[in-house]
Length: 326
Image 1 (tube, rainbow, N blue to C red):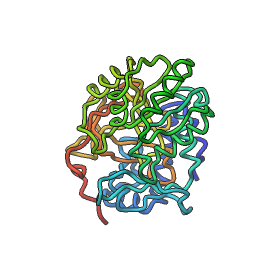
Image 2 (image 1 turned 135 degrees about the horizontal axis):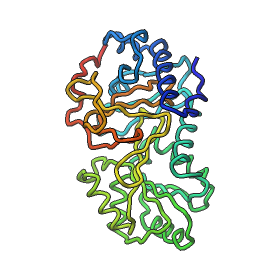
Image 3 (image 1 turned 30 degrees about the vertical axis):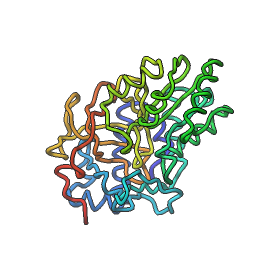
Image 4 (image 1 turned 30 degrees about the horizontal axis):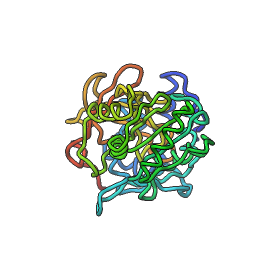
């Protein structure tokens, strides 16, 4: 049995590697879906001795299978957003405390204690549906902040503008977290000159606007908010951990999350630092589902386990992965 406390007490690369290999063995034994995938690749724990050799489960399996490594019932099921009629991903979480520990410790390591912030959330596309892991996290941040003006703003841009103005006047440290299209709506309606507010975008136009490259999006937001940098959050339904960028497009990972970059033409080959390919995520907080996920994001690795997200695969299925149904 894996000691879950060890996940959040990693102090070195060797700690991470040892624990990741232990979790791989655990999930190979206890996760039926992941075991079947590994068997199809003829991969067995006896021959896996490095992070690069671990098989990464294509993220689409969360759309077609219940991906769990636990006999416990699901405490909550997080679901992804999707267009009408599309199949959504479902992440069956059997221990919500793991998620809470991960996002609280991850935020604290990057930004400090959430209690020192007022937290304002502009996440209409997430609030309008059920099962959002982002809403779950931000709702907890709002409660933990204990600030009377913390809260969600669905479509009340005028109310949000007034709240931001009053918090700025009070020199209150504030986190404004929002989906990209809603933040653009806000700065196209009001002008700001923020000195005490972190603006954090969670990505995605969700069909509401034309997709923009990161630099263009951040330039527009910086101009509208009067800021010098826009922060970003990288997370997804299938993960229990987040990475954060403080404005340069480079995401910093918490100690229990790592990214590897795979060859787009050969998904079993891991590329060196600086090369562009598909992002493979090792999220050790996913101990009760699958900690090794091949995403549909394109990016590259940088120094100190940081990474950059450059876009997504054009096609709906990952190239070279034809083991989707069994």
